[in-house]
Image 1 (cartoon, rainbow, N blue to C red):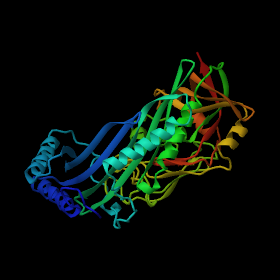
Image 2: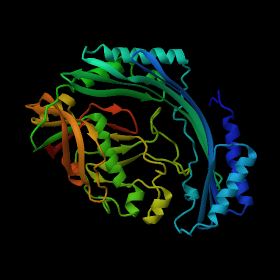
Image 3: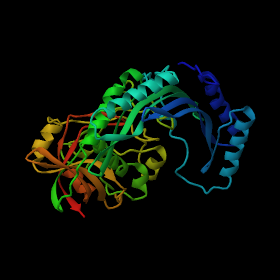
Length: 446
């Protein structure tokens, strides 16, 4: 593990995280957990060929949670001096004295702690100078501007690089941590035609710089996506199939994950209450959670509580196989943590046989959604209503772009009306999914 460029080594912050627990114990805490982290990063952006921003970040911090039986206190600091760490622990202990008892709080069970910290190849520092980053950003933006003469302006292109490491310790004797990196290139441009202006963007993100899409290709895609939106038309209100292209399809999966996550379940604020073992989606939907993908953007050998992660089938043929729980939410529900404190890990959504063009042909006549606006989703009822833009399709062929429309339905129904999942899979985050075709939604126009 490389500690280059950091003010502390990994071994030092590991020792500091363990020392914090000793302070908590001396102050009377029955148990405690602490995390120390360090990160450095650089972001460069250009606009219309000129450098717009050069940003550096160098962050460090410690957070500690203490438990006095069933009373909990939490505090954090960005000062890692011994005195500051001790003062922060004392503050957390003081807070705990004034909090109400909560029978469900506390560390995750000791027997669930990870015993083997797998190397998942998550750390690939990018030794890139500012000048090199500027040139890559300019290459990206230039490629976008050259796509079409109607692209007249730019919101800029950026190149970012970041790496860091952390150590987590708790009173069970568990200490674990690792280094990780994340890099990205993005571009957004504006096109104009007959006083109509449109914007769109594209980006790539990866653990290792060599896994990023080429800057020129990112720019070209951003430019093509922008130009295709020009001369948009309105359509009449109708009920038709709706195809969410891959970048937006992950949002549908995110909504499903939120609905089966512990916080929404124990608060009874989910449209999928008591759905374990039940049909919650189309038989076409299969979701596999895999925390152990090498270089994965959401890979981890343990969760935020030190609990060992595990690969599992989350949804099988539309039937829900498991919830997404931390130890606290699991206790509230009378269940066992699923190792998801801090969120889900890599979600692999099984693809169907069709690519994007094949899904258009399957759809026949309907709407392709490429942009969503607003947050019109009621997690309790599942009611879904979002502003949207995209393309009208007839006989499997895109006819023209559309804008100023609203798409509406109920998420519980939408999940069950999935009739196609494309093999045009994008890997831009924790969910790997292709475009998703919904059999029917209401499309409303002004």
